Length: 87
Image (cartoon, one colour):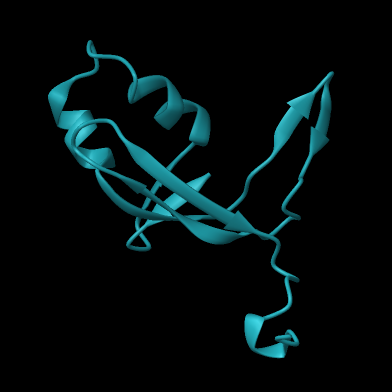
C-alpha cells in the first residue's frame, strides 16, 4: 500500500494494473502521478504472505505522466550509511 501527502492511499495492485493500460481514465492516471511513501509491501506466494522488506518498509515511489516509475525500498532496520566503515 502507498500513501501520498498523508491523505491518499492506493493498493499496489491497483496502481500496477492501471499504469500500463492506455484505457485507464485520464483523471485517475493524473491522480497517481507524483511521489508516494510505502506503507506496506508484501508478496503472496502459494497463499503465504511474505514481507521481504519487513512489516514497516522505508522507501519512495515516483510515477511520472508517461507511465514510468522508480521504486526504492529498504528494510526499516537497515543500518544508516553513516555507521558503515568506509575503507
